[in-house]
Length: 165
Image (cartoon, rainbow, N blue to C red; front, side):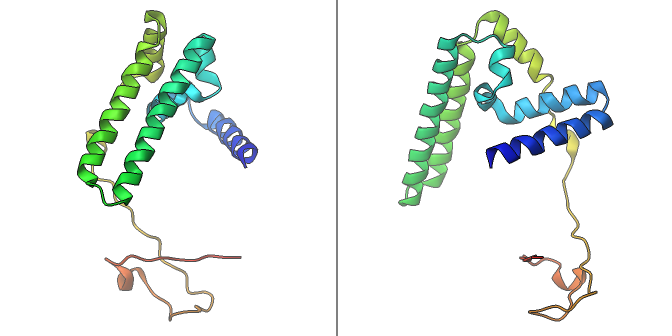
């Protein structure tokens, strides 16, 4: 499974390289790093690019694992009836502390390079409201569990579709 995902990612990267400009590819990489956050330090490329020492890699891995365990424990507490609002605040605090601790393991040169790799922050306010319009369903074949429906009939409803070939 992991190999198939890696192959699909490599194929997508190759195709994007043939479509996007150098600047667009660079920005896409920045967005990917921002999305991954400190988890990017667990990947193959970033630790090498930052020239992290073996001890830095291990310390970062330990910090991330410790935070993930804390988050999992908080999740279990919520499932057992704990306060979800308090849990969310604790998770945010754990993540912020982890990010700060990971950043503190870097040398000043590594910190500058990491910030350079991240690029400028993403201003989500510029995106506006994101809306999606479902495509109309084709009635070219027989429907099994209902008569053919249109988007108008389904507006405002949650719809689950099961497709199989």
